[in-house]
Amino acid sequence: MPEPTGKPNGRSFPKLGDVAFRAVSAVHTFLYRRTGGKLGGRLAGSPVLLLDTVGRKTGAPRTSPLLYLPDGDRLVIVASKGGAPRDPVWWLNLKARPKTTVQVGPRRMTVEAEEARGPERDRLWPKLTAMYPSYGDYQKKTPRTIPVVILRPL
Image (cartoon, rainbow, N blue to C red; front, side, top):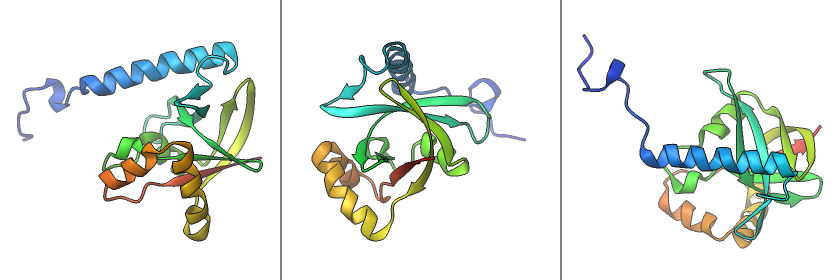
């Protein structure tokens, strides 16, 4: 018999911060899509894209506004989750289904994701931390190596 948790169906309630973050992300996504990136297209001086994923467990569509770094025709994103000990859900979903779509400004495109490793990651990381210095702080907060993700247009 499962141990009682005092919560409906033994499930935990989402943390208030998680609920607030999801609400802010939903508003950001709505404004970005509605204006073709004129609103929400930059954050903290860095460009923002909308990444579409499909829940690996639920099959539900998800959209995440994320900072990105252009690298030739590729887009580079960081699975930092603010330095949390676990990878963000969007990265887990993307690993399960690497082919997806992104929106950059008014333009939507199909991309395929792969993790940057070795020398390629070493080349990109300083550029990413120069663009958004908090990435360096996030890496100091977590024992995991924060994934650097390359989105290649298809």
